[in-house]
Length: 69
Image (cartoon, rainbow, N blue to C red):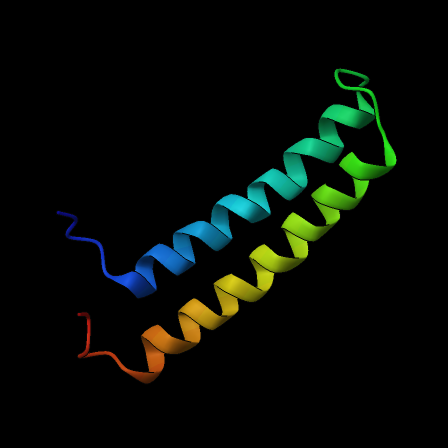
């Protein structure tokens, strides 16, 4: 199916969540989207969990370099 290892998927998912955590507040600041409590909290949660997922994925990638599958 996919040639991407599960650890790389974790890192990519964390990166996408971090990017979403930056883009959403930027769109709120320039008044493209209306800031609501749920949207603000969701962007904060996406940024924080993306950071943790990225750290966990990189730590697994460094800790077990030979086990891709």
